[in-house]
Image (cartoon, rainbow, N blue to C red; front, side, top):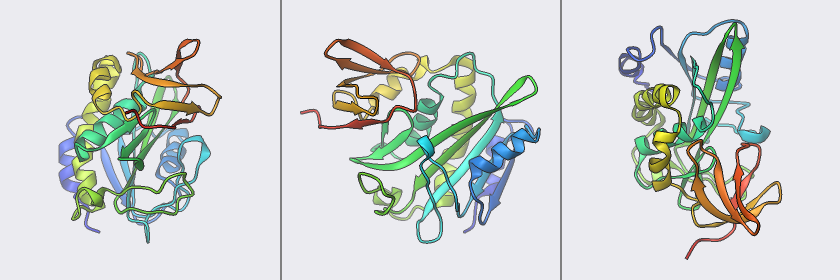
Length: 253
């Protein structure tokens, strides 16, 4: 694949001084690699792209391989970050990626992008301490072609269902600059200014939910911090932990 590395660098470098972009043919996980570097004291902004991941990771420890017979875009953006409140960062990232790719995409709290009733992309955010600073590693995986064998409850969607000619390099070029801007905006302003935009793409709103902690109810959007609001039989419950899996059980009429 031919990656538009120079064009992406020219767009992102003015936003993130010291920024570099690397494309690797194969690695275990772009997130794992940037976390290794961070723990070794490397804190420069970097966009690491893998044409193939052999041990990619999703939320809650799920594995996610990509490349080869599974056309996908997998990358991680690492950078020093110091927001007043980290809550809602995965929502801000998902919103940026979805808006950059296609208007038909929707957001499933807390960090998935769906096309219809199928997952198209996922986000995994990790942080490491480097001295008195925090280093954020923001991993994004986007299915380019549909694929049915991830061991998920529903088959995965692919971006080519919406954009038949798109490939991973083109998708990255669509995403990169807007994502950097969105992260810097989040660092300065938090999630609250994005609440309305998230609501417009909220896949879960008005739907009956079953959470892995046993909570059931009707989704009522997110609050200004990005917490999921669920209307239960005993009132509105705020779900803030990304370790709680949320599954829609019915489509709102």
